[in-house]
Image (cartoon, rainbow, N blue to C red; front, side, top):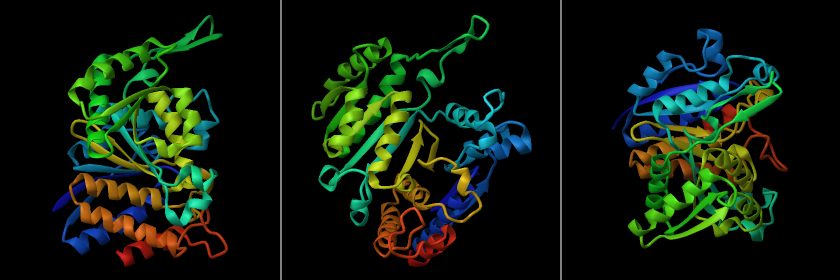
Length: 351
């Protein structure tokens, strides 16, 4: 198979972890007889410096023409520390999601046997955890009307959803549940928010189309609590943009490190794959960042191309690296911490 992949390294540790995912992907392509063409493009602070905006038209065109996008991270402290900045790296991420129509963020959370005791939660609470969040990505408060009133003394952000936006993310949730354990949880705040009541009633009307799926409805605060208590009770969860942003970061630490979890953002046509961690600017250029989340994001990419053996080869070698201690400093314990590039080389070699 010939694959045309847009490569957006972004900011901070993005270029370093992306390099390792490319190494591993190229090794997989060589092993299984595929051909990958990588097309690099700028985004985030790097794009602001070069082109004056965080998601230039040229980058968008490269993404549109690609079969998929492999993405690193966005963010830079010089913007984080300047609330008055008119152009920000994160605006590029929102613009990219909106222009590519990436309305569903797929965020798995699972544990690794060799790291089970590295989690901040007790073993008995997390063993068997294998859940997936589907977060709505192009609506809600992040894209609603916002502004200042009363000479800047009052601020507002508006959360707005249309029924069709809920239907399309719920459809993906039901379809994913059918492929897994046929359990779906709709996360909302329907006791307070009108937008959440729309979510709940919309999902309820769709239940009849998926009679085999057992659907539950839980308030976001209860889910936040139960993710700490018994995360292995969940399977597929769907939720709106803000709630999903918060809950998926909470769930990510169950595995023991934010540097381990992959994700995908998908639309009707476009697909983007990225690690769930941020740009981690403190580690940029030091060759110490954990590349495994980005490598596993590449595995999700191969799987979505129906290249399941290729995806499993990546997951197998990642598990082998964890078992044998070929890890970066965030996971090193009573042993040597390997450099980011060394981990990537080891993974590619063992593919």
